[in-house]
Image 1 (cartoon, one colour):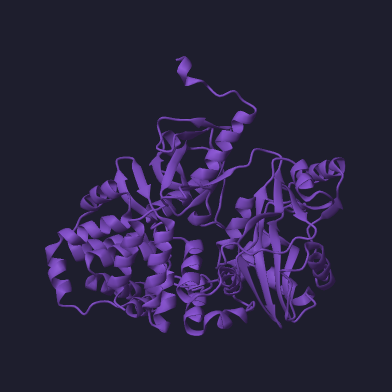
Image 2 (spheres, helix red, strand yellow; image 1 turned 90 degrees about the vertical axis):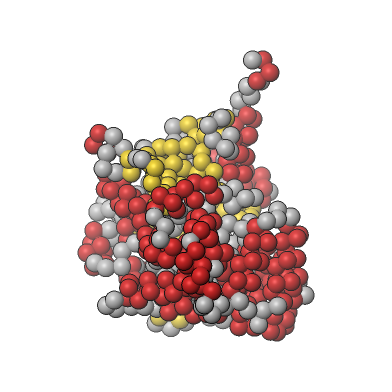
Length: 564
């Protein structure tokens, strides 16, 4: 199958807002693919170069991509910036500059057309380039793709390489399309995706073997799965009302959630984003190897950074550990971490996700050795829950988790089996879409950040305001370097960037605003931490921000504009 066919299909998807039509179009397209083309095609259509579980990364910066585009098209940065300003999309801007460059178009006519499998093979070769001269080899491989690409293909190559597909077709819709294409029940597809961690692989199995092939799937050690998610509760009363009885309340630690896989003496640790962080946490690996009394296990836990007095350090210190792959021995002393376990999904061949939460907790306790579990009480008494909340906060933790005693584990689902409760107004996870150089002593840093939430319907990131508060000088210096690496347009002292960095933002209120397209703005926004553990797809949505905005009026009067 030609790569051009995939790109044309993506264009068709992005041109419609009708959900059923999208699903039907994708289902029809999947049927036309060969068995070995299915996974790469599905993966690319979702804006990824490789399956989710695949730990290979391309590490191709926007600076590298823009240099390749400039060399092939003869387009300078200013022309590309104008195209980006018109379209608001780096892929569309790339398509535009390829279309207007006649030399490249004529050269591409004499090249063999790209196929889906060829694109995958080149991306694999680029990801696997190591050693001396690896960066140059990687760049030549990527340039070879763009050198043969037609303008529309260039658009989607950029989208795949940057992870910015934005066609409106997400993984949940892909599961529906796979179900329709190969007559496999949707719940079976969803269950298989949960076990494999990747809808692309599930699609391949559905095409080759049908429902029978995916029914026999189970967890695979060292292949991470999506973590179960929690809803935000307004207060401690909400889970008590929802569950109608006793609740498991646990400390909500201000740390990093991890998924631990153990097979014999081999241990691997994955972040919340399913990235392998084993090398960054050698003491955790050593502790799990020594203490866990099981041959095969998939566990969930939280690591926190601790100070000399044993109290938790801020999340930002912990993230320095997660981003470090060199000089780990020094970091072991500077930023020691402590592991707490809170769930077990798989134990010596037994799948536990359908077990009640209390049963999973007991099994975890039985195999955890000297590794502590998150502190817990089981109660239906609100006063006892409040005292426990105060205890958690006094110890430097964020608040509490509330878990239904008979609840199953639902990977990737944000249901009501788990709630999280914090004392303060729930912060938002937003994406930086642009930044401005500061004034005075901040003149050398991009230190005024434009914050945006994702629109679920369009996939666009809509701005909610700006802030220059919250980061230290060291963090601003680091952030400036990171933003310049992903810059797509410079406009005076302002730099527009790919929406890829997520930050946690505290605020006092959400106000109505005529300034921004979404009609809302944050009041007194300040960054509380950089969410290295979250991707832009996991950032808060405009729809959720609007819900919070509307909820404010349960206790406030709404301004009646007709009076004015």
